[in-house]
Length: 234
Image 1 (cartoon, rainbow, N blue to C red):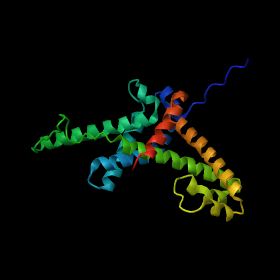
Image 2 (cartoon, rainbow, N blue to C red):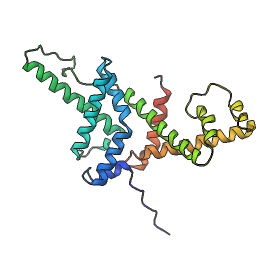
Image 3 (tube, rainbow, N blue to C red):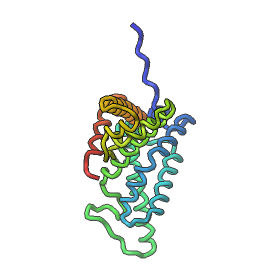
């Protein structure tokens, strides 16, 4: 009986296996940071409560620069098995340290020092994980849609993809049958085409999530988390 082929390293396993200290690991971490910039930016923007988009963007860039500069990811932590969990924990820590530094600077300048009820210094980010998770889920879906769109265009079916995309991204407003009829498809053929697109999109979403996990066994749980996140009110 042949030995099962080992799982191919994902972007995140490349980072974890090497501790982020090889060219391949650094490239993989850099790609992950670039891909999932939006969830971090949204989390920081909501944490600031001041509507300063430029300041939030500056902080997001500073955070990712700090992650990429460290190389090593610190002590072993089970949550690091999921890049989503690692990234959220890391940005919270980053904002906490920034808040501490700002508080220390104010004390040094003679400003009054304030604390939160929990005894933590002003500047500690609130536990608003839902904001991050929703932005994460939308990023995953968006990347999967873009990949499917490119694949369909390469197969000469770009028009079909664009026509049925509203039934993939949840923005459908018209009649699915009418959209199909405009392409010369019967109602039955339209249902089959949309069903197949949804199945292909689901596979691409799974692949996108898998690239951020260390253990393939976590994939179904992460997919359920994504679906649950998107089902909650924004």
